[in-house]
Image 1 (cartoon, rainbow, N blue to C red):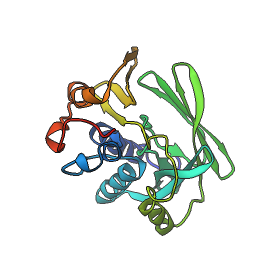
Image 2 (image 1 turned 180 degrees about the vertical axis):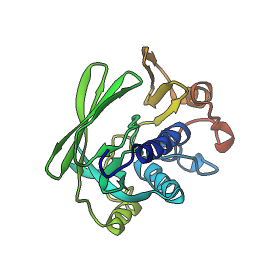
Image 3 (image 1 turned 90 degrees about the vertical axis):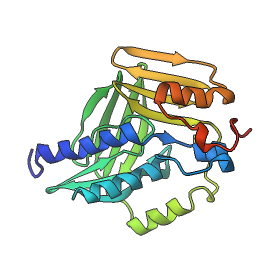
Image 4 (image 1 turned 120 degrees about the horizontal axis):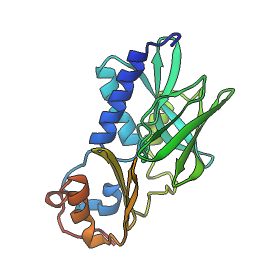
Length: 232
């Protein structure tokens, strides 16, 4: 691997996997509001990416804040990683299991948990495609040039007061790699992905959310709530 040792790439990807196992993509703070007694681990793309940056810098990796485009809007946060003279992107803030570094200069594809990820590179643009249940869609676009980190941090600071409506603004999201499976609870539907196929649990109403988080994710949110129900 010219300009970048495979061991260095593997080390960064190992840290990415650790974060996908330990820090959920979740919006419980938006759904529960002031019912929460304390902050929770994980969060949306900004929270997860900032946590990864802190961990990566402690490990001595050359990482910086970057942003990406979803449906044409620059609303996604990810990490820019330099290894030798090569540039990569770590989409550790993704709600889906984006477990591999995306090179800025060549295309890759891989599969995990029965899903596929691939990139297309054209000039200063990297496109990321996601295939699940046999249907592929454009998930993310990355402008390699990016913006100054201070500007991205300012956008993060105002992300919930800027008027932007995110896909997760009004519906529950909680996803995590658990053992050999990837679990994604969104709305009233829990999807469980593995190399053996897809399992779906329907009808997860508000009253069952704490039960499902404990049973499937091993996370007990009840001690952190002032009341046992989700906000209406």
